[in-house]
Structures are given as C-alpha cells and as structure tokens.
Image: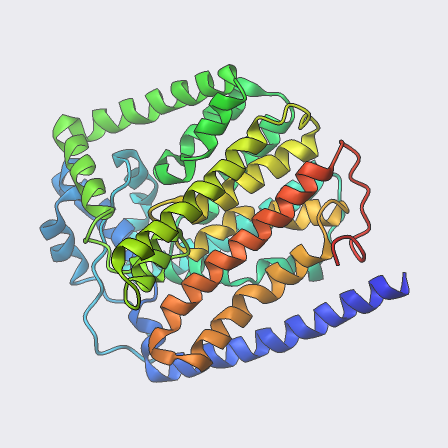
Length: 413
C-alpha cells in the first residue's frame, strides 16, 4: 500500500506541474493573438454548413467556393484578435450531420461557439459519470478532473470538434456489445459513419468474430442515416459529398504530416530518406498493427464484459495509427473507458502515467526541441503514445482469463 500511495502521489504532483507549464504556454499564445487564429476553426465550418443548408440547400454544403464565401465573414470576437483571415475548412460529413447545428445559427458565431463548448464539456463530464456507474466504479471529482483535463479534450473544445458526441456513441456501442445486446450495439455503431475511417478495423473485427447480429444492426442504422441524408440533399448532394471525401484524403488536407498515424510517419521520413523506404516502413508498421488488432478478434476466450471493452479499446487505438486521417484529439473517445477500467484494477499503472503525462510532455518536449517542427514532432510522438497504450492493452487481453483483479501499483511496472 505504501508503494501504491507513493506512486499515485508522485503522479499527482507531476501532473499538476506539467499542467501548470502547459497553461502558461497557452497564456503566452493568447497574448500573442495566436490562440484566436485557430480557435473554433472546425465549428466555423459546421456553423457555415448549417447556414448554407438553411439558405441554399444541403447539397450546396459540399461546394468549397460556397463554404469559403460563408466562412470568410465568420469572425470570432476575441480579446486579442488575430490579424490573419479565417482558416476555411471543408465539411465531408453526411448531410444529416448538419441538422445538429441548424438551431445554433439563430445565435451569432461567437455565442453559438461558447454554447457548443459548454455543451460538449457538460456531455463529457456527464458521460464520465455514466460510464463509472455502468462499470460499477467510484471516481472522485479530482480523478475526473485529471483524466478529463487532457490535451485531446482541450483540443476538441478549442477547435469546436464533434468528437465528444462520437465518444458517447463509441462508449454506448462498447457497453451494449459487452452485454450481448448485439443488434442494439450495431445500431449505435452506425452513428460513427460521421467519421467512417474510425470503423476500418472495427468492422473487419466484427466479421472475423462472426458477430452477424451486430453487423445487421449496423447495416440497419446505416440505411437510416444514408436514407435520411439522401432525402435532405438528393443524389446530387450525396455524390458531391463523395467527391469531397475523396479530395479530403488527398492534397486538400495540408495537416497530414502533423497527424498521429503511419501516413504522417512516411511523410516526415521522406524528407530525410528515399520515399520508397519511408512509405515501405510505414506500410509494414500499419500491416503489423492491423494484424495484431485483428488477431485479437479471433481470440474466442475474450468473452467477459471487461475483455470485450478492452478489445474495442485496443481496436480503436490501432485504428488511430492505421487510419489515413487521424488527429491526436480523436483519443478523447477513449477517455471514459480508460479511466473506469483502470479504476477497476484492470489496466496497469503505466496506462495512467501515460495518459496523464504523455501528451503534455510530448508537446512541451517537441516545442523545446524544434518550435518550427512542433506539430510534426508532437504528431509522431502521439503515434508512439497510441502504440504503447495498444501494446499495454494487448498484453492485458492476452494474459487475462476473465479475472482482472490486478494491483495497479505493481502490475507491469
């Protein structure tokens, strides 16, 4: 118990120090005006899409010229405004997605962004409580603050992203799947079609496991989402979305070298080594990770609810490294599970240390080593971070027999 207490006390102190340093860097960015430059950049795209849907129809959402026209006049009210023009973003999501933001257009951009941020933060905290109740663990407000006040959540709130809502859908899928509510879990899973690349390992895994009722539910939910989108935008809008999505995985996105996937590794490596070698190494890494994850789905002994939750967790971690489009803030989908499963005594202390200290330390180190290369370096660091968490989760899964009464202070230390 003494060792356990010392480790937790050390982690708490280290987290406070790192968080204060990170907040100081944020304050410096605010004074320079840089904080306002990219604040709510994704929300601006959602807000503009809702305006376009109201005024010109859902099909016009995917017209980049129309988006640029609407977004160019959407400027946030900041205490220290930036002198840079708004950064335009595309909206390659299903037309039905824009319906969520239609009511927010009744407010001005800044007010609606603040409301959206508060709403997402509230959803995040309530869902932490929901998962803790569902898994039968008690979590103090301090622990919720620690695990919640993380870079993935902060980045989602800052950009105005939608990943907190996807966190709820992935969480509800995992809970339903682990409780053998097959068709219901598939229906819930279909909501992740908002960002279909998060399904590239989950769906093959379900096929390998022969989870046919889950897949049937997924197909039913997908039919509803696609059918509703077709009714809103027509075939013209749907085909425009498909074309935009194709552009989205290509040169349209200039932040690819900053992502946390094997693609980012290849793009950065080809600056110093031959391109064929860089892409070959990245392809081998992606194949190895995908193989490791899919092999876990073939393990029929993974039947307990905790094992199934860990299986989905490992799959999502692998997905973030393999997916063609993968930013670090998408890790927020795992925050409730990692905290609650760790509190159950299932995951090792290393998981807590990595989650609480890994991202901020990686960011600070990347900033100190190369300010010009900070985003690329941080993205590559987060790729390594996801792989470490994946291997820790994989090790627990492969060693477990259904009884996960593990002492967090000693296991895997």
